Amino acid sequence: MGYKAPLAGIKVVDLSQGIAAPYAGMLLAQYGATVIKVELLDGGDWVRVSAPRAGGNTALSVMGNLGKQSIGLDLKSPKGRAVLWRLLDGADVFMEGFRPGVIGRLGFGYEAVSDKYPDIVYLSMSGFGQIGPYAERPAMDPVLQAFSGFMAENKDQNGQPMNVASIPVDMMTALFAFQAVAMALYGRRDEGHGRHIDASLMQGAAWLNLYALLQRVIYDGDPPAAKVHRGVYPTADGWINVIVAGRRGWSDFCQALERPDLSDDARFATSPKRIAHADAWVPLVSAVLAARPNAHWQARFTEYGVMHAVAHESLDLLRDPHVQAAGLFTYLEQPGLDRLMPIPGIPGAPPLQVGTPRATAPLAGADTETVLRAHGFSDHEVADLRAHGVISGPVG
Image (cartoon, rainbow, N blue to C red; front, side, top):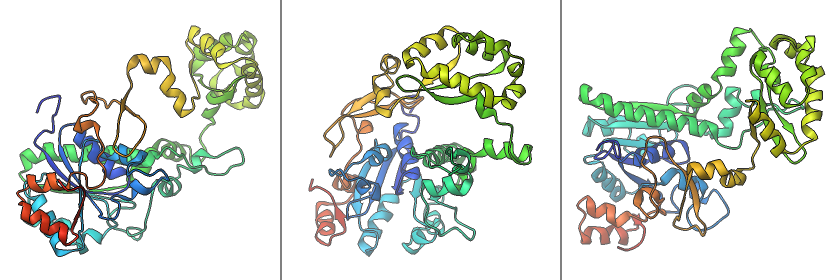
């Protein structure tokens, strides 16, 4: 317990797949919970085979499984379902990420589980939630980016809605789900019973796009073109993002550009005027920035206090001197992968230590026998389950 592992003693049985719910479970593990990931026999969670590299771990499975134990289990067999019931003995949290109705057909819907374990916190994760006409639709992050309006707010120069590749809907939903489970565990102390949490990518997407939505509600349509005050501009050797805020910000920006005349131009004296005359000043600014390299503009903008950042390629971030000085990433060996994985620190969680369980994303079924024996299964029972094809994983 304590700050180093505030969730120590909490047991989580995690049947989730994909990205959002597994990532929420990973966060529970990082704060000290024991998280048992129950995976399919034929390769485990589908994210393990979502990329062409072999080895049993991918970028997504590493992100979603750090600190967990993995057991390979056939939930379609009576023996496999009996094993799961034994795993649930003493569990505080049950997580599932199937389409609505699937987990109930397996016999582990909320009513069945809570009837036997009334104090359990039960998380269901789906694309569109548990009720409504779209409930059974399959969905992933890009689907909800489109559905929520997020893509439409991210149009290219031709007006085509664009997908953001960094799975923001999954990450937003995962953080909400982690928060909801943690708060339910906190609230359970007073309530004395568990609860069902219905989390959906639709909710995460709605929050992700809420600023744009509220702006359009307030202005009954298109809001003022504030984006002209923040943009990504080409430089002589790359791209740089700049944000101009307020009258002083505009003046400092113009000084940094060595174009004080723009600051004195009456057309650009106020934010509304700059928005109205964006067609006049944006090309001027673009031409100035394009003439010098990023390093020059970083120095100038830093000197004048202008908010900015070079538009890094992802791997460039690892080499950034500030990132290195801040110790943002820990480089971890992971099973099935032939290179070190850079994992950023999690706010409030202890630093990751190379080679420890909390810093390891297990291969599918890697901990099957360890988990079973910890739950009282005898050598004979384990051998019987293996002989009947109910479990997978290495022989312990």
